[in-house]
Length: 410
Image (tube, one colour):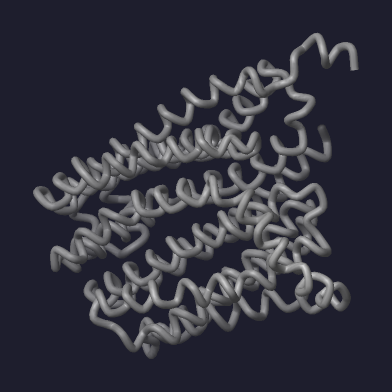
């Protein structure tokens, strides 16, 4: 229990660094860039995030559930990542053309591949419980670009931001990847077989990851394609404020998946519910006061992040809605991480499918008809649906858990 507690604390501390770095970088860019440029950057970044979810399903998810993620599995993941990036580049090219910035592709492509390489190292360290090294490298990766952008903000364009992300991601990858001096040849020789194994494990969650990413980014893309760059920028800027919960949301997911995967053979169903309940109470205790403060004074919260005269403070109701959406995301994440730990891929897929179908239908109409407000309402409804479906499938894990009598006899 002590080791589990230290692991949870280390995982949350690391995720706090990651989320703070992302959050502060987005806030800095939102303050420094014109709304149109920030909207274009946000849309390009959203496509990278979607492609990262595909990489997560095919490469980092299999790495996360390995009993010994270091060594050979890490080498395989590092070798598969550039191959995935090559397949993703045409899609990223379409994205840059769609926002009128085709020249952004080289910088965005470099950020994509270097970011994914660093994420492989990060997930390997996390699953291995090496939190000290993990925190140090993630501090470099996520606080480094923030410091550079803050220093250069008067002279930096969005292509330069992506190049900074690429450079610092590469630096954060080298200390671990560079120490893997042996095993590369053997891993390369067996790479086709390892890739097939990753596909068998990751393919069932690939669709779920893609649907989750699309349902998250879809409303932003609709606003951008509706030629409403200020609304697209406002949606991202307001979401940045609600995203103060991101360290807890992603930290819980990163810790709960391997924790459940390691313990699933000896967890009874009541034990599983208690484990998820404890993690949920910790999460609620951490983010509940923040959500309450934003809900009570949304305009004040927006001005703290973007300045007294920021136009983003003119959307208090939309910020309240996005805060509620993030509360739903937290509940859904706890359920989804538990299902992933049991490799319940079908349940995870359905958990993402129904909100995605909602987003593509009624959510699209709400966004197209009511703009920013419609997108925020649709986000709440999609998040609530995802949490409800996830909880339903969590309750259906009972047959997969260990029977109390069997545990007592063992």
